[in-house]
Image (cartoon, rainbow, N blue to C red):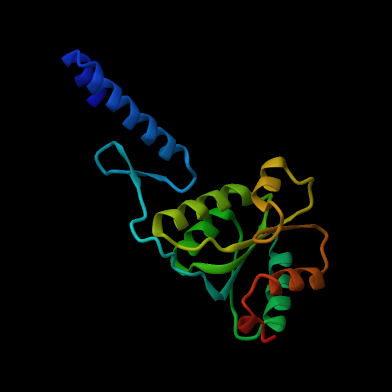
Length: 190
């Protein structure tokens, strides 16, 4: 609207200033931390976190996301035995993971990559947007896959210091050690 008005006024300096504002807004919109939301009137708006301090994850909660019930149950049993006192939620798909995370803000998520309804990467993307919108700390995600790791997943995992990826079949020992390395010391009992 402002660009159109500047063109109608034939004011080149005004148009130049508006173009700069639009350029900055475009750059902000392209950043990952800027979430697009529905404004309730058929348009969109961008939620900006006003408070610079992030709400920390709840490291007393771990979520397991896998469409294979047997594997999910094995993970729940192994993790509950290895980390007594930590609450474990288990869901069969990425959509349920996203919805549950938005209520409980888990500290660590064990996420299968290949699932129906919403896969692990899509769910991670949604969880990341929730964190951005609510000004929450991003959980530590341990992706699990029996397939070749995609380039986009490699980008998410990066150097492995925050997120990680384990190849299936995986050992319970590797899973427990990976979780342990992502929990604060007081949560692990170490």
